[in-house]
Length: 187
Image (cartoon, rainbow, N blue to C red; front, top):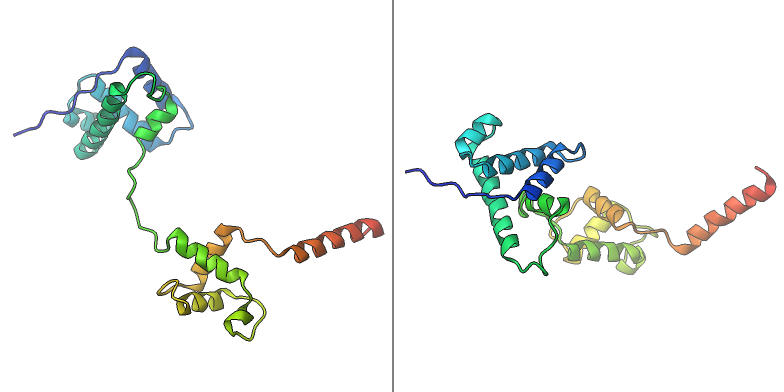
């Protein structure tokens, strides 16, 4: 028993906008494929035919047809004064990958913030006989404090780079003085 595909009926301006987006060079190919599916579905084509015509999997065609139809139906049912304008950003948002795809984050924003906070403390406060943190020491300290169960030094480095943790002000001031001294001496 075959199922009936969701019907997509587009007005001329809506169809023209989809075609315009499809023709833009800045739009990634995967988005263009999704727009092709929607445009073909709006002509009344079956998923099997669309899949063969564009060399796609049938389930891919059905998924994007259904997802667009759901968003479009919701958009149409929203009060005209409240709904977002029909534009490129809206369409591309509808055709984006769903959240939850791919590998899940190992470290929550809260854990990353706690690791960054530890890096701003002096290692001596943690009883370590050093004056500066290394990624290895910071990883061990985060585990010791129970912030995370395990973490590598390279992950600590990536977290700190993403946090844009700046050097303390005195270092910046010293660097500034060296520059001005070099300008004065002509070197």
